Length: 489
Image 1: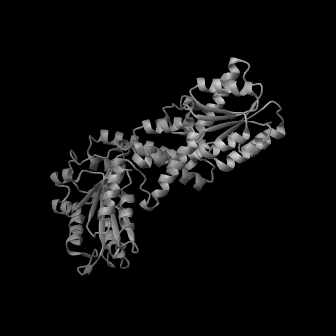
Image 2 (image 1 turned 120 degrees about the horizontal axis):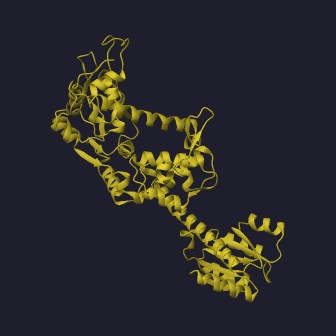
Image 3 (image 1 turned 135 degrees about the vertical axis):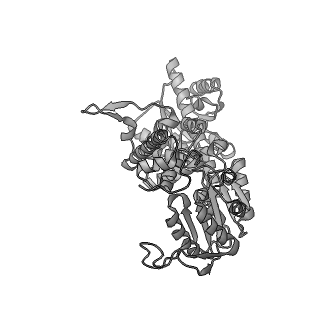
């Protein structure tokens, strides 16, 4: 309760002078700013002109009952947390107070012993912390609403303001843009924001992950093919450049495309035309190209793996995306954004994140960037049992907890963390863990030779590299004695 112990502005209203004085002394010793009044009418006047975090109201008072005053407080200042006090407690009065919006309920006498005094201070501190949490939620919601036209780009830190400034500066141009950033930083969101602000926004936005396809499939997807150009090409096929004519094409992981495809892509950028696979007939296209990569293209150029002329064609305007660890000030805003998204999607009444959980989120380094944060919040929303995400709801990697190990009847170890997750989430985590262990062991056994590792895995070399780079983003082909030749199973 360290955060909850911070001072608050408290209004105390009670017609008993001894109670009023005792509460004033207790709360001021705790550092709170206290206004103590014996008249509910005077309290109404103060509430009309002053801000308070917490109001402590006696149930039975002359002029106006505590319930009537509670209703008036919630009407005029709904953000104020109210604690009701009474020496004549009944179930009906307690229910009426809670129904009217009271945060808590104290039964007199409640300041006879030291433990009672600490309990009163605790109840006030808890109400004050709830008020601060709601204030922060309103501020975050206001900031998120102001970002509704950013296509999901959430953040107000200096690095993100610079990204938004660059987007606004180049969106109306047809110039090629290269978005650079680590995996999970939101490169496609930048591309979509550029498209949404451009004169092409009414036309198609087409995205493709260049690292997810083999060379033949990639060229067919990008440029199309004619019937009979290769086995299985039983009809003409329009490529993405043709489909995106008048609009924008987003080439993700551009650093993974083979050299032969780079030549064809360069022609598109220079001449504004494509040739379908198997055809010699040029087709004019009018497409804005936005490319993205997590790799260092100048390094690939020096290694002869990326064409220098293509690099300069792509790198006309560069927008670097910061890693999440370099803009940790945006973590609370992003987390709140994802809580709203997944609470709404899953139909859960979760309103915010506890200060302790926020502290853990801001202390974590986020190697998986915004994508990892989004997954962590989705998991927390699924597991949360109240209306506030707590540290226990966060992944162990973030909270620092070590999951206990259970054993089934056969004696096999099972991770307790896994059974708290949905089937789909647990399966995804298990698959990632398997892939990481598998590729690490395989690369070690093959002495970092990618082609040999791909053969042993029974995978196409480019597909194996795609899996490998998920866990070794900076992997290069050095030591790959078979160059860029595709390995066959």
